[in-house]
Structure formats: C-alpha cells, structure tokens
Length: 476
Ligand code: MSP
Image 1 (cartoon, rainbow, N blue to C red):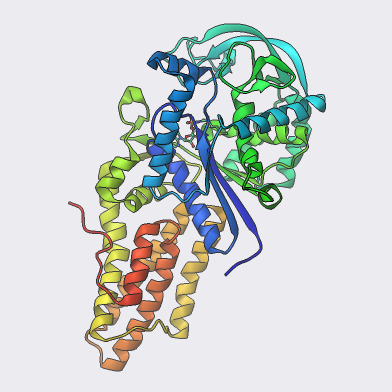
Image 2: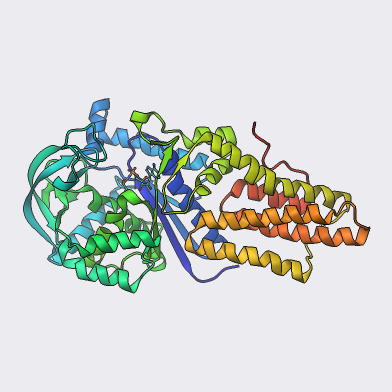
C-alpha cells in the first residue's frame, strides 16, 4: 500500500557529551514509532536523528579530557549511533553538525538572513551558563545560579556579536499559530508558546566572539555561529546532502520535530522565524513531550541514575523498554520510570494480555488445524471499533492512548476466549470462534508493529505459521 504523501520526522540532535539515557531514548522511541507507523501507511517517510557537536561547552569538555574537540565528539557521536542501532531504531540518516556539508548550509542560511537585513552587529552582556550554552536572564536566575545547573557559577560576559531581528517576527509567529493550531502539539504547549510570543520577543545574539569550536560566520570570520543557529538548520541541511537529491522538495515543509519541553522555545519560536527570514517555509509541527524522572529523581550525573537504555534492553528486551516508556503517560506530560514498574507492566499488560492471547489462540489453532482469519461480520465490526480508535490516536501521535486501545482489544480477546470456551464447543462452533480470534490477533499484531516492532514481527510470523512462541517470558 502506497499513498503519495510524504512524512518527515526528526529527533533533537543530542549533545554528544555522554551516552543516551532513558530520557533521550524516550524521544527517539516516540520518533521511531511515528516513523514506523507512517511507513506502514505507505507514506514516503524520512526519519532523522543526529548529534549537535559545536559550542563552547563541548570544547571545554574536550579540554578537560585532554583531547581535541573533534576527537571528543567523534567518540560520543559513535556512542549515539551504536546505541540507536542496538535499540533497533529505524532512522534513515544520522546527521552530525561537524559535517562540512552541514556547516556550509548553516552558513548559507545565516548569510540569507544577513542579506535580508535581519542580522545586525551589537554587543551583548549577561549571565552566561556554559553548560546551557546560553545566557540566563536575570529573572530566571535562582540565587544567582542557572536554574538547570545550580552547582555551576554563571559568568557575567560581554562581547561583540551579531543579533537576529527576532522581534520583527512576533506578529508573523502569532499568525502562524492562529492559522495552524496544530503547529505545536499537545495543545497546552501551543498555549505556552503563544503566551511567550505575545509578551514580546527580544532580538538575540546568534554569533559568538569567544568560541572557536563551530562554524565561522561567513560575513565576519572573527565570529562563530552560536549553537542554536548552527543546530536547528540540521533538519533542513540533510535534505540537501549529496545522495539526497530532491529531498527538500519532497520532505520540506513536512517536518514533525519531536522534542522535549526544554527546547520548545527554540523549535517553536526561533526556528520558524529563522526560516521565514531566510525564505523558507516553517516546519509542519513541533511535537513536544514531557520529562522522565527515574525513581522520582531528575536524570543526571549528580543523581547517578542515567540508566543506559541498552543495558535495560539487554536485560528485558527492547520492546519492554519501549513499552515502559511509551505507556507511562501522555505525550506532553511528565512522569517517572522505575524498573519495578517496567516488570509489573510487562507481566500484566504484555505477557498476561497479548502474549497470553497469542499462546492460547495458536495452541487451539494447532489442535483444530485452523489457518484462516475469516471473522464473522459482526465480530469484524467490533474489532474495527478498537482499531479505528487506535488509528485516530496514532495519527495525532498519541501513542499512550493508542497503546490503551490495543490493550483493550487484547483484553477483549482474552475475555471472548474465556467466555466462549472454544475447547468445549462442538467442532463447527469452535472453529468460528477461533477464526474470529485469529482475525482479532492478526489485527492486534498489526497495531503493535510500529510500537513494539520486535515482538509484533515475532507474533505475526508465529500466527501465520501456527508455531508456538513465548512472546514475553514472564519476569520474576
Ligand atoms: N542539542 C540540543 C538540541 C538541538 S535540536 C536542534 C539539546 N541536546 S540534549 O542532548 O540536551 O537533548 C535534549 C533532549 O533530550 C530533550 O529535548 C529531550 O527530548 C531529551 N531529554 C533529555 N532528558 C530527558 C528526560 N529526563 N526526559 C525526557 N526527555 C529528555 O538540547
């Protein structure tokens, strides 16, 4: 099945200053699920992940480790690439901002804004947090410290640099949100963005004089492009890389940017304005999710809880990890991860429900030598009421609710088999009940395919071949 729509989904490009943890894996699982779902719909899909490798913070870290910035980012970028591979992430490309092709594009973009009169020289002074690579406004400081890095001293900095005329785009942005009420999802994050813009935008510095690790400003080589003006263009630069001929026409402005709420201002307010200034269309959507804590604690080195998703996946299987994260709360909200909960949910909602139903139906199919999937019309309609709900949710990116719909269908199947007792019925009756169940399972497997791909592929094969399989061995 092919339709002629194209779909483009991105993850944030992560700072390669450590290895992925549960929080970063969460973003990537959302994007991977959406990519798989849209591919399945037959849409021409492009799924992008990557790393954000420039800036003073990275240069500082490299220095601390006694290696060059390039060596430093090479090492960690490889860590990200391998991690996504090990987790079976289906990204079509991995972009790195140190790639010359990207640098060239980011420079061209800045030049276009410069030519449009939107970049002008100035000086800037303020409290700079090197961990955020950002100036923190006076009002945001908590006891003189960065709210995100309370153990770090922000430094009062003054420098010459170039500003982006962000303020010029206030009305245009408000109009964009009005015309595209789904531009930021979920709704509460659109409300946040509108409110922020309505209060007025200040022009911002987009270059740095003191940082050398980055792309040079094309019209002033003394200056380096400041991180966000270097990072955000990755979403568009890759569409122009050699081998990607025709991608820009095909995938822009289709982009759905999956991001965490911490970077919503940059994606929903700065990026569209940058694009407009340089003559491009804004992306389709900024899809914003909330944050995970682990056992009630913020994820971070200081809390020593940056659990590796690969370690968890080796222990429980990748789908168990995907399920634990994607079924915990609705996109946009915050929540907590714990291994105990992973185990409970795995046993009850996966092994006890879908896995159990699959076992029972394959077992009975073997004893009855049944291979068809011919459900009665009424039964088929009933199953469709679940699958339609699932699809509505998936099209909105509401994976949490889609998973609930799938779980309800699995529970319905288990109840139906228990009520109908096909093992007791006379032969003909048993067979119709079983065919209904086989149809239900075929549909159910299909619903799980984009979300829990490994298990669902196994389930599809086992059901097709009537081969016994333990989809989710019970965990103690
Ligand atoms: N490099 C920038 C992004 C540039 S995109 C053009 C950046 N990188 S980051 O490495 O700090 O990653 C931030 C993203 O990681 C968040 O937006 C979010 O998607 C994800 N998360 C980091 N910690 C997280 C949690 N604790 N929970 C959920 N997501 C988390 O910002």
